[in-house]
Image (cartoon, rainbow, N blue to C red; front, top):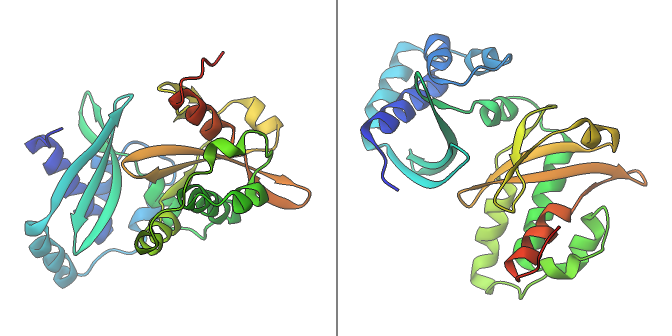
Length: 235
């Protein structure tokens, strides 16, 4: 999937706005959110802004995936990969600011639990999955051969740095079966915090709740996706 000049220009403006704390640029390029002000609490000095502008000459943008109108991007800037989600709206490309807003505040414990659950899946660690799962039923579908030892550190790093945001009632998320669902009152009534993570060019939902005093993750969305991948017919 090719990056268009319009998308590249929007990402460039988003990166400039975020790194310089420019409130006007952020409002212009971000999807609406009541906490956008968090992203402009510290505004760059003129020299800092000039340094960002100079480095933007080396900016690279790669579209990793497109799903339900949302484009997951890998933005290469200053030697690092920055995942970002862009949405094409009637007024042009806009980026989803929720991940940046979440990163600007102290992280809830649920984020760490979701990352540990992802790491356990990546490493094929059945014991860790049983410790972290709300319900162990079907977990065997998530256990695979461990990766080569040379890849373990990289996988752990990617899992530990996965961007996350907490979704609110009515917000959309992928169901991992090729469709989209929303955060419902049922999630809240069952005590779930619904998180959305960016990993491997995709958006992953994590349902986290307290069980016996410990935060755990519902494996159900991942088990259903694994079952479908193996040819199961899901009702």
